[in-house]
Image (cartoon, each protein chain N blue to C red):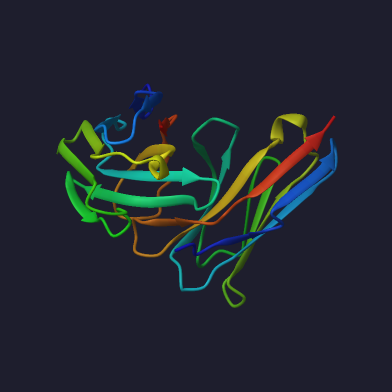
Length: 114
Length: 110
């Protein structure tokens, strides 16, 4: 298996632009997580899905952020409009649901908003 | 909010020495996991210890868990330069969601 796949790996955009981050989880995993990592705030959980259904989105910073999982093999995290303070590394991770399992992380998307 | 808090924030040791990192948490947990992150990479799972376990080993890694003190430690024995990375503990509260600590930056000098 190729592991969790994220695209793009790097994204540089200007303030006000829409940004879409993509994630393909490991086949067979039914839980998917979006995290954001910054020096100031560390690793924060934004939202997670079980069986394509959003379970906990309490970490989504504000309405500018939205996430979807239209099927078991694809998820997107969208920021519209983007702001400089959104600059961070965004990770997607997947696992089997039910607890007690390790999470497998993708390589991350480094987002820079100018 | 961060559940696990690692200590120390940074650790610098010589190759061959042992490295110990500690993690404290606040609420009841189902299990606790340790992850490693190399610079510019995603996190990689190292070891999971369940709430009814006290100690677990995996290669050069030894993890302990004290639920009465709400703390865990990660010991890396005979460290190598390749162990240089950030190490995070993560607690499992609701069966799926992990809450990560701020991490310990380990530097192993050769």
